[in-house]
View 1 (cartoon, rainbow, N blue to C red):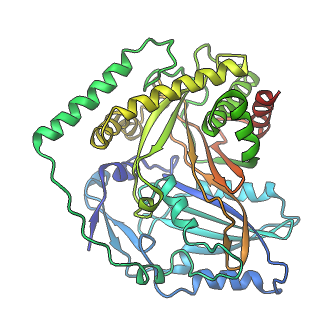
View 2: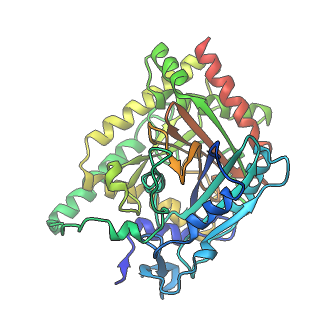
View 3: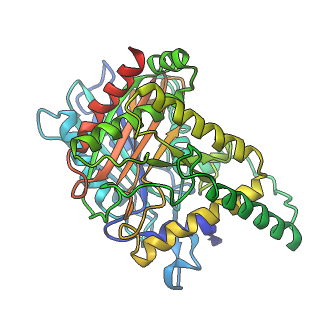
Length: 449
């Protein structure tokens, strides 16, 4: 039975071009078990492909007949080919992380086949240090960042001895308890108009804020070299930072983990733009996704997020003043969201994202003033060790997307006592993206001094 996509989910299909593939992904690193036999990697591959059917949403493909996917719906792919979706690769010797990131950069630049279910997974062996990797990408219309991470990680074991079906195995649907039918009250026309009025009022109030205020909204960002047209080429960089170290910096300055993370991003962006002689006088503005559901609800797939705009204080040379500006900006965001009901936030999300979608579809993005400068996301992850077919997961790096006019994306995922940073950008638009890793470290260190 066909399931129609929501407006937000369809938007990701509408915006997709060869230069801007609309999928998100994850790169997980694993340690080979100490007693692993010589054919262990082949057994992992068989575990991933020799499955008893395919579960939702992995067996669903897009059905659409109208332009711009205006009637897009999910339908079951009755000719599903697991060997197409799960692939076995190997790195050339010596299998450095550098080669792994280069491979992921190339794989992430390739569009998913719209005639098939919109996901692919690559088992990559030959990584130095007796490790291997699993890179998986899924279309943003299929999952948002929170849903994608939860979907994959919830289907991994919590001990080396536990064996669970592959994440896409049909056994997950077979073992799923029957879902009770939700009784949803239908909003009346007056309720709908009220939500539009209140959401519009919030947006107008934001637009009336002084331009030099830390309170930000769309179209309050300076144009930078991050805000140009992009090509289909990508460069991906990743690294882990100690979560306890970041928490300690937060305690030192009365901030949260997210405050320190955003300060690391603000400091890194300031350093990067200074090296390019391209730092604007006005602060950069980040578009920050905020999840609107719990982890359990994330398993339903699709998108349930809103977007808020946060000042990164990049115009301030002093790291503590920069952090204070970020905290002030985030506080105003939380206060404003707290004043709105869920239905009002949904309308507000559509109002603030419609110009983004239109800019991508019409080709104006990257040619006119930006709505913001870049997307920065913080996705919560598991606090305990996870295992895949007996192999412990060592790290899990997010791989997000870039758009015309927004050539850089910074996303982190927490895992045990680490924050796993993933930086993706257009390699033709932004040079030396890998230097951000050094700049993150320098920005954290200056908050510790």
